Length: 78
Image 1 (tube, rainbow, N blue to C red):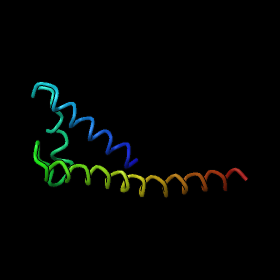
Image 2 (spheres, one colour):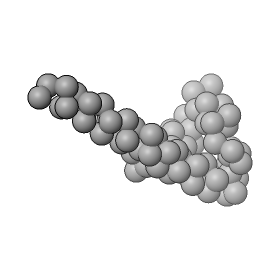
Image 3 (cartoon, rainbow, N blue to C red):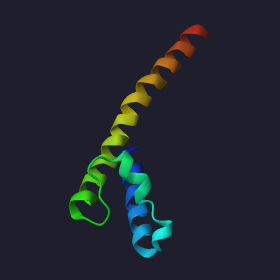
Image 4 (cartoon, helix red, strand yellow):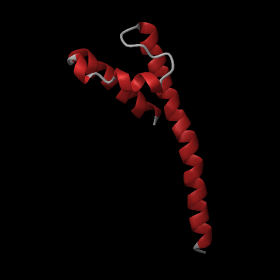
């Protein structure tokens, strides 16, 4: 999940660098990633770290829920 979000972030930054400003995605990333600023090294690094950590957060919530629902389903079908 972290790798997926990091690659998505990098693709959006790359997309923003090659397209006109009307198509930029940095307005979507700014409220989600603390410290993100468009076209600054500090903002780029903060955004990359934030995207990676969001992946771990999502996995940390999803995996226990998946195990819990799977174990509940398996125990009720016995």
